[in-house]
Length: 419
Image (tube, rainbow, N blue to C red; front, side, top):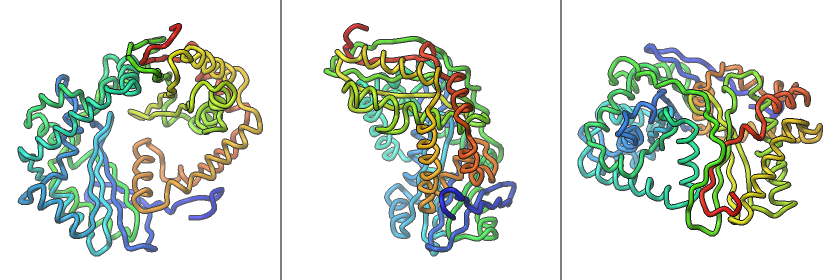
């Protein structure tokens, strides 16, 4: 690695056993991290079985093969192995981090978890209770209700509009066979994206890959339903008894592969993503004292980004907060950023890049994200130069292309005055 403006990682592509992995080799610390994923996740859950993929992922570390949950956890702990699985709206991920002497055991346990999950009754009951409680907790807050309603309105006929973890009702009703079926369609030998980092050579990684995945059933997960266009829905108010309202707002963004991706990041950093430096924070908090914080970001799902923001404020101030937000949306679309704002945003995005790669696990996860968004290996090395080459005019053009107050869709959960 080098300084931020010349930041790069020596990414190597390793092929073995029909699999392709990206590797950043670093022997400074005797640790190896491997991350992998499949497309699918909650998007593959059948109607009425929402939450199956998330439950299945949680159960993969709750016992496998001859090892019940406690014995499996002991085996991981004894070797200081961190192994985890997760599912979200559009993908299913796994990964481990292990000290070099424990690497063979990490591979063995990860492979066993994927190939021979036990799904014991006690483990299923425990994970189910946790998932039901989490689903209920989400709906206990105005923020949780607003977020759930936002996605349901934006994608009413697509799995992206459903909570990835399901509802309390759907999770409580999930039969074990549905969880096992979720694993069967998702955890396959093909369709894999793999990334690794740490004290491992290309040859060692090539030997590891077949051992890690060879026991999985052949074939790839089924393709998820294509993501439709974001549906503009205007403004929705959910009556919730609370002294504050929670607001989720957003609109269609752009594809992760769009050539204007970095210009959009700079534009959004200036408008809504720059902490106290962003225009929305300056007006909403610093000038008018309407809310403690407000921001928006690019949320990527199915390789397509949606601009999503949030704010919480007193019920009496919601209308003014939304009016100010729309004014700033319109001002960015009309004027673009100033030269000073541009310079600050580019400096931040360039300088903060190395912070994503401070340990082997973060490097492996970041490489995996690049692969999930169809980036080539050289994309990372070229990012500082692409950011530096952006002109104010190009960023302003992206603002005009993406932003307009009429494009914003808003969900308010609370008792807002005047809406």
